[in-house]
Length: 93
Image 1 (cartoon, rainbow, N blue to C red):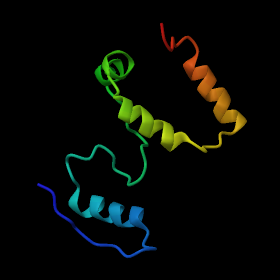
Image 2 (cartoon, rainbow, N blue to C red):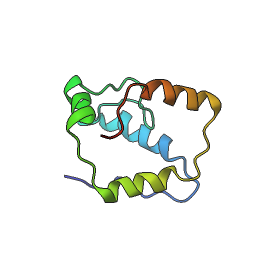
Image 3 (cartoon, rainbow, N blue to C red):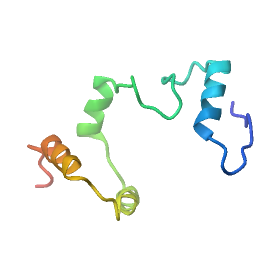
């Protein structure tokens, strides 16, 4: 079941409000304890294997991902990290 807990005006720090509700409600379904942070979260090996081998991404999703990345500016450090992470990945036949 979903319900709206609070409506926020523009300019309200949404992460602070989210953290407030995490703290008072202590939701069981939420893996993360800190709002807005992936700190401490790790995908299971089964999920990682799915991402690597079995996931099928539609053309619409590919297009949306491409549009989201358009205009993104990467630092040299980011480029090096991406390059290292992608070494050995075969892009196509």
